[in-house]
Image: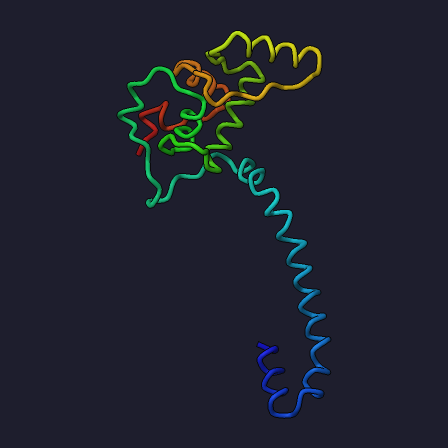
Length: 173
């Protein structure tokens, strides 16, 4: 708004007078912009981590699409990406959104901690993961296409104290 007054002054009183008050204004803009940037930049960079620190996943808003629980209640095996989406109260789709990514990281942590057993498709993956872990100390990444049984997901959910709606029909409102 102050910049508008400077432009009006430049027209009415002449450019040299108005331009002389411009450097302090730009200095103030740069100062306050820097302060705002110092506060907002870490929040922007850590937005996924901040979302993980929140206690539990938020309830979807009315505009969010709920998964078709009737269809998924019949299924006994899930792919990890499907389980992550359903854990976040989303209809399974790729790529994972932010909430499903947080749920996928939980599942991946459970796999690495050996509290969640998955059905691996390929013996070669098991050998490579074991080799990387023993020789290089690298934690293997979870493959989104690995399978996981409903019973394993139930025991994992109870071990971390959560009740995802796709596993617990009584928790659905």
